Length: 109
Image (cartoon, rainbow, N blue to C red; front, side, top):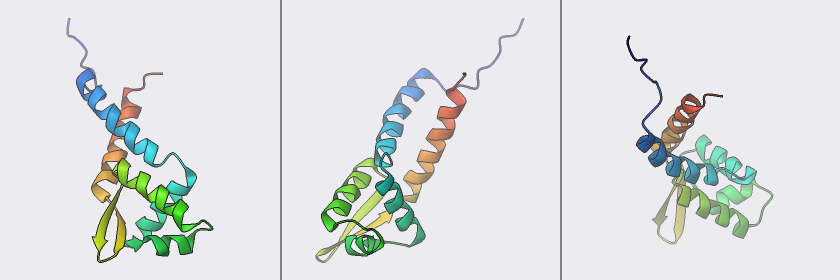
């Protein structure tokens, strides 16, 4: 009798990926952060002021959301003189897609 081969990833891999998935999910856990991510995806990069111009929010609010997106790894911040320029980390966005697909494969409900 042959043993069935599971398509599920190992428990160690699942545990490692869970932390990364949770961090990225935290980054997009607010509708404004999703909207900021969409704004950044449509262009190459933006300063906070350019993002504020697209949203009905105060600069300080947008800045806080950008800080969270950066901590989640989905957005990169680069200092250019006295300005901070934000852009989507496309590699991390692809990683998020992969993690969600893996999560879906693990579910056996």
